[in-house]
Length: 129
Ligand code: AMP
Image 1 (tube, rainbow, N blue to C red):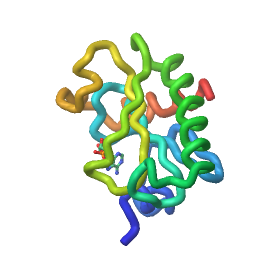
Image 2 (tube, rainbow, N blue to C red):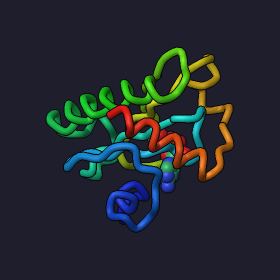
Image 3 (cartoon, rainbow, N blue to C red):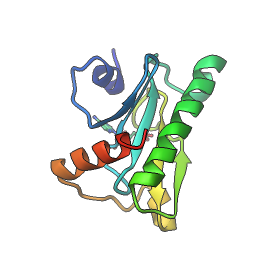
């Protein structure tokens, strides 16, 4: 069965898109640790990040770096952190999280955002790409 992220790629489920290439997609995490929390995924569905073929893995890291630089320009934060978990969605992804405090990296404090907040944030990040 296709992962929820493959359904997003196929356009069957909506997302707040930040960036897209032929091979990768970045969109806002729907349950963010902080405003601007973004997920970068390969369009190729593979469960675990380190099972990706080397070219897709390298491409995902390059794509994630580009998106992280844009997040840092668009969202006030001390820095952008990168985390890989994958316990919830079995489709390799990188979390890019604007950090102001250690709790922002810990997946315990969640930010409640309106759909307008999500839309504005996605557009703001995209404008720096
Ligand atoms: P994990 O697999 O543990 O790295 O966590 C998966 C992440 O995907 C969580 O932070 C969720 O909030 C996020 N997530 C799950 N479904 C969606 C969705 N439809 N749109 C955006 N983010 C999602």
